[in-house]
Image 1 (cartoon, rainbow, N blue to C red):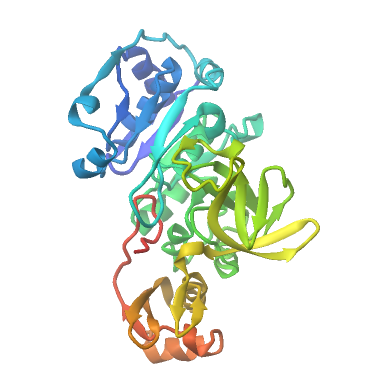
Image 2 (cartoon, rainbow, N blue to C red):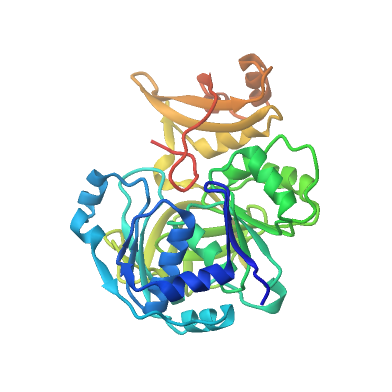
Amino acid sequence: MPDKIFLHDYKTGKRYSYNQLLADLNALSNLERYCYKQDLYTIFLTIIAANLHQIALVLLDADFSYEELQKFQINATMLAEKEHVVPPSINSVDELVGRLIVNKDWELTLFTSGTTGLPKSVTHTFKSLTRAVRISSRHAGDVWGFAYNPTHIAGLQVFYQALLNGNTLINLFSAARHTVLDFITSFQITNISATPTFYRLLFPLTELYPSVKRLTSGGEKFDGALSEKLLDFFPNAKLRNIYASTEAGTMLEGVGDIFVLNDENCYRIVENELYVHRSLLGKGDTTSLEDDEWYPTGDLVELIQEDPKKFRFLQRKNEMINVGGYKVNPLEVEENICIHHAVKQAYVYGKPNILLGNIIIADIVSDAGITEKELRDFLQSRLQPYKIPRIMNFVSFIELTRSGKLKRT
């Protein structure tokens, strides 16, 4: 086969071909059981090799501190341990893919990417990791913009979608806006999967990107206003919203912010909260299971049609803010702030207050020129008075989590 690009990584300035990937796999004679790496290519190489040799792998974020690792009961000796492997002598990408997909019970442990609290470990099999992967000739020419953390569930699923179809991956994760936009054009990227936060930080856009045929969004609540803005500049793209979690992988796919619940053997809605069947879960901390079968996701939904059930996500169950006896959904406030053309990003949270319980605060990244009065006037026609932030902080950036989502405290 031609020496096709496997990965282009802007962080190192290096480009790796599939031929190099095969050569490096064939040269490996030792393999760690814990992957604690920074280099994207090395992470991918380690995952593929562990999968190939059926060695259970623990995938660690490169910025985990040693204090965090100790809480996971992982020490320096464990990180240094290596297992001898026999070089596989693989001659083609098709042979590699064939040898990977037969190892359906191979296990990979990763950590949750929630916006608060200490991450928890979850163990998936190759089968559950690739449940949503589609392998066919029509995907052979895809070029993926890789915009997720490679050690988290969304990044792994994009990685496998690309690898198992022999696609090219272009690293966009944490890249500057101008780098992302340049790479979309120069590499003729066809597919991008990212958080809504990633997409919002691309604006303002001034030109069209016709090479992109599919945009998917996941990891955070998606809103219709962002959908409309994206499709204006990606005119050939289909836009899909993915609902996934570290515990269960990809579960549902929606159009815009609307999802259809068409399999009540796997999903159910109880008191406005989405539950999933335990058969979809990886192995991990199951203390939140209320019985032997159903797992409460913590995601609250609004049912908008009964048959078939259609719903939209509202917010996380634990993120509602009490303001003078009223419940405020911070995601609703953020969405309305971000509708303003001059706003790029917003983070809404509560601050304890003796009289009201909490007051609403918004950190806002915006273009120059917008004033607080202008934004307040804009919100008055969209939100009830108690939902409008009492304090607005105009900031240069908003902190993100390891997985590229807004960091909620």
